[in-house]
Length: 409
Image (cartoon, rainbow, N blue to C red):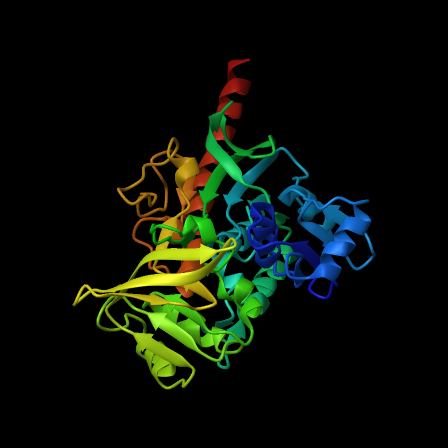
């Protein structure tokens, strides 16, 4: 799908357009975006194909077909993504298709178990939409996130793992002697064990104007939205590895990238800091806190900052901003089946088992995880080994019950 000639006609203020752009970005699908407010030819085209209508987004595909205001499920079907499982019962269901979930699935499938992976967005997780991975062992020259994700996906398929994408899990629990996983589209699948590996998402600042301009000047994925700012100046909010690395990536398109760091120094690794401080296109403003976003015509045009030492406020005018201030666990759907800590991370034992027997958690969603790609894959492997022991115990228990039933006859 990466070579498809896809064009999305929309506007910067349209929430459905933002959703569709986000979905295509998560699936690592290349597309051209035309803002019909600024492009009269694009607006005329939309009206022509809709017999005078102007419903957006209107998405045109290489074969000439189009979708008008599609749901994510409709987009997924058009892209040929597998969105419904072949069976109703599995040995293991993995919720989350990032490095943790896919690694666990590979290990379990190699042991001969039937495994289903359900991912709410794009398989590969955040690693798949990261521009470049430089610290994963075995890739001395680094590897693009898309290539890394594709390698793990293909390896999963090689061992017979069934993969679903664009399916959001809304509930996990126990039912009829097994665990169940319910998806947003109404399907319920059952298994002898469940692994929650839903990872985490980038935190938001929570300041006035942020919600208003998400996708219209405020972004959380440089890989997805950075190319829209070619030739224009942007800002990155944050001081950790993600902020610094994404700032370096944005210099591919933008003549100047300003990092707004709340503290007096960056908290990224020395390698990342050295790269940022030695890149002429990157400017770092320390002790800078963003307090508000403002805009006109449904698009961001002003970032209000406050100096954390002097209290002085200032207005900046980047074309867009990218927020990287930390991660929040994707655990809300599992609060009834797994104990969470105060920050929402899932609590587990040393065997990765949650407060519910047979339901496990690993990776960035788990309390105590290190939030690093290599450890995420490692946790997937370790969790798979613990799940294997659980499944073996389950099989033994089932055999004992069957033998006892035969003896009693």
